[in-house]
Amino acid sequence: MTTPPPPGCSPARHGPPGLWLRARRVSDADELAAMTSLPLLRHGTLRPPFPNPDAVRSWLERQNPDDLALVALLDGALVGSADLLRQMGRRRHCAILGMGVHDAHHAKGIGAALLDALLEAADRWLDIGRVELTVFADNEPALRLYRRFGFVEEGRHRAHAFRDGTYVDTIAMARLRPGWPGGC
Image (tube, rainbow, N blue to C red; front, side, top):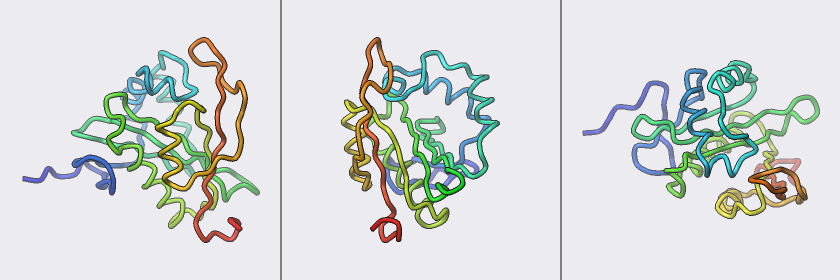
């Protein structure tokens, strides 16, 4: 027997069976705070330890309506989150990508599912021609995922962030929409 979809969810095109995607909600604050406090996820982001659920809720309440923010649900639990932060003015054709996957669910296709959904929306619905991101230079799994989806390295930020007691480099990457006039 097939489990009915959670309210407001769509099935993911990638990832494990039973993976659902939906818009991120303010009510996700507690689960997001718990997920971002996990050691592997935090190690791959610029987030400090011990996120405050009230601060996460406040951040969610202030989201820009032009941004697209998704969560991934597996067996009813939040296992990933990703967003495209739309830029403004003469950079309105650009968005900045951010994402994270629960420590217990790495290498299961959840990041690919979130990235696929965001890029499809960027290409087919939002007219975003350029998606940008920064990733820690030592995060090989993330680099492989981004390359698989067409992102290319554009530069290195040396000693860009303080992580685990040392300064680390990040890689600037971007993806131009296939066939986009700005993509040369």
